[in-house]
Figure 1 (cartoon, rainbow, N blue to C red):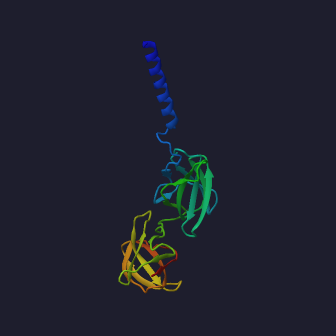
Figure 2 (cartoon, rainbow, N blue to C red):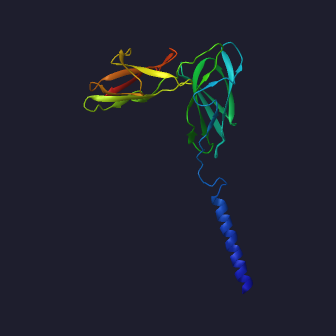
Figure 3 (cartoon, rainbow, N blue to C red):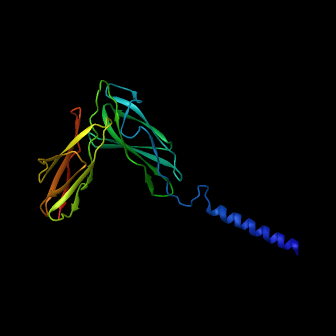
Length: 233
């Protein structure tokens, strides 16, 4: 009788272990969603001086990030912030190199992908300047428009709306922003501000507006966000 009891307990224990093994994929989760990559280099809002110069106008820059669970490959997405053109490089590694224009600001992020799923997980987006010869100061990064976004339909409250954006620079010397706003694709100057917003802007309902933000720094440098548009209702 005791032998049968011991045998039964062993069967239950083995069955329990097998069940646990079937659920646990070794990562502590049964999800196939890739983890979020953590960017390493080039650092956020930095001047990248580690690139290998390949010509008077270009250098080869190495990008690195953390490995993530449930991931088969990564997409490295680079954006030239002056031309707004983007390129994508796919790799199975946690690093990749790219030839970039010197003395040019870029943004970059990495998406982790899983072969068995269409779901991807994107890292944060970082900005950096690819260094150039003879550069003493660097212009601010172009302002990143927050709201209204491009093509957004926005409801005015008491005939007014708020505009907002993000500004950053490697030297930390931004002095202000010039906001241009109007109903043509060459909007006139509207206001100079030192904050990252312009509130209580009077607008007309059912109208398409165009706007852009020029960022200024203490060295006399400036950059343009590019033209955005929204519609009021």
